[in-house]
View (tube, rainbow, N blue to C red):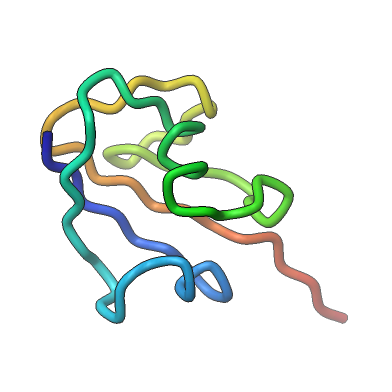
Length: 76
């Protein structure tokens, strides 16, 4: 099953060099499973968006989903 993923900010180091990249994943994989597959610490993630909608970690990915993963930010 194919999805497109974009990892923002410091999370980009867990993906490929391109901003957007395609992944082939197993059917019935949740966002949580995707995060584990990519070895991203869940504490580093502020929120995730699938197809333009903020989604919880239990969402089951579908063919051709576009996933965006955003880190926590700090500033002052």
